[in-house]
Length: 384
Image (cartoon, rainbow, N blue to C red; front, top):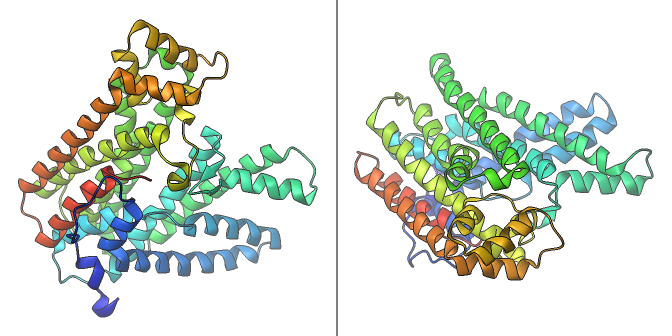
């Protein structure tokens, strides 16, 4: 990172070819932010290496546990949250400010993300993540292979919960390493803490919805999307970046980031809803159709129920009630036939337009503006 500032590909924020719906987001994000992602990964690797070594001093088994947590953090991922935080910061400070002082704060968001993912996988009983076994599944397999006593599945879940907890603590430690004045760090922490609370709120509503999907609604599904995904994926990272730059909470840029972040974040989750049913598992890294199989009340399925004919609704309600083994392919066709997929696509487009309008309404560094325009499309028109 020459001159303490990402250069080269990071500043090439307008792709030579239009971003297509069939282009996977990792390639698009790499086009914009390769240098930033490399810097974030280096920051994480150095921090986590030292932490693993420290915990190894407690007991050899602790070293193994800490290494597993480290590997969860470093096992790929798009680094979406640090990317949005970086451009939120860069949009405020301009092109000349060195990024090194805030790199620990940007990397903090990836530790928070790992905490959420590992716990979410336990709650959803997910078998794979990013094409690999989830943390609780991998640890359970190791437990069984070693011939240890007790239930391997239960052990895997317990260890995964601890991995998530450790990542949350690590996030706090790494944030404290940002080269900020004490007063600014306090302001940054206020927004960071609110982001964490909203993430928990969204996750709780998501879990609650699965217990009584028949009483859920499209509005409530969108509320889950707003707090579970939009808040900590786009909106709060952008505001986190602005806070790192010293932007006050009532500044015009803060209002624009809030509007942009909610719109792109909701569109991001709506795309996830579609990918959860129609995505290619070899690209998404997760099985297709799980939401249909469980009747999870996503905005897509709530819209499908709302638009369905009586016969279509009986098929969808049968899946939600867990009666028999639903034919996932057939249910996916039913959802398309209701018109829900087309409606969700329109909702995504409307939100992207709203986000871009928000950027047009405020003064922001032009390089950051170009990046955020590209990222709005990349985050919502993706295959993984």
